[in-house]
Amino acid sequence: MATVFDPVRLAGLDLPNRLVMAPMTRNRADDDGVPTPLMATYYAQRAGAGLIVAEASTPNAVGQTYPNITALHTDAHVAGWRRVTEAVAAAGGRMFAQLQHGGRIGHPDNSGGLHPLAPSPVALPETIFTPRGHQPAVVPVEMTHDDIGTTVADFAAAARRAIDAGFAGVEVHGGNGYLLHQFLASGTNHRTDGYGGSPAARVRFVVEVVRAVAEAVGPERTGLRIAPGVTANGMSEDDTDAVYPALVDALSGSGLAYLHVVFADPGQPLFQHLRKHWEGTLIANPALPWPGPLPADGGRAEGERLLAAGADLVALGRAFLANPDLVERLRRGAPLNPLRDRGLMYVGGAEGYTDYPALAGDRG
Image 1 (cartoon, rainbow, N blue to C red):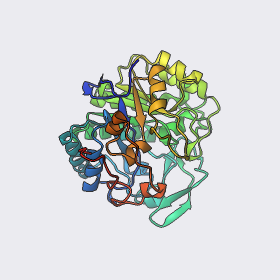
Image 2: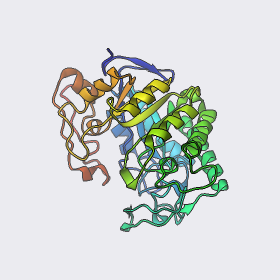
Image 3: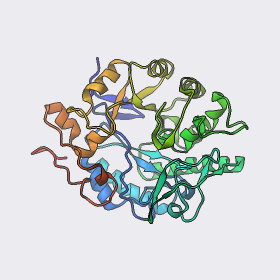
Image 4: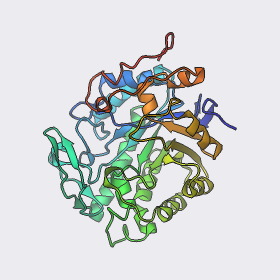
């Protein structure tokens, strides 16, 4: 049986272990979404991961979610990310970019006055953080077919920029309540055209985005992240067991680099179905306590349960935040750093970001 320390090949890359650093928003970009030098330090510290999937970058201005979120739609964004990928490569690591459009999770104050777009005019039932503090979410504008076509093209253009910036590939974010997830879920997709209604219609936009990205950079450089049943950001799904098999069927034979499943539970029939019907590499993010504390092993035991159930790689999030040398700590059986105040994840600066200690003598 594979362990998290076994090497594996993915997207033409030889990964030294099966631990993936999951994408996690950290709000350390500048006001224009350009990655900062501090971000290069942060990611290079964690280059021991088999693969790093970078935090979400928006493919266009209207898709911006919160302040200081990274983006990939200008030359400055490419230059900023290139500094990060070069630092990670110099430290021996490998990176994929993640592309994420916020959809209804946005605000004009965060996107230069642009009004959020979404599959249907259903507002986020929460406040949105903006430069002026928390504000009520606005009702998004329902996307026209032209909006949909433009957005698909923006994802493809951002994917090309990611490769130009030195990423080995691109992960399309289809979960956690953002735009693609909004199309998948009946609670946020009330459309009656070809993009709404049946599960087969609701997966259409996601399939179009993924295929456009794959055409732009190659399917072997394209991954998809999904979050079946996840209720983050006010999401509601009443037919998860129909939607996600339909999505996997629609992408069958596409040759994608991987499918990345969030909060995966090897005992659930849906996970078993996805593993059986997804012919490619499967990355699984274990269902760990949230927002409660992590287990002492950071999720290793749950990750190896997923490997035993057929996953190929395991994605961990918070354990990598607090432990720049997580792989080495797990290998040695060394204790893990505890995660500090969750608020430090998003406030900017080095505290709670690049100041977590590595083991004595470890390069992390």
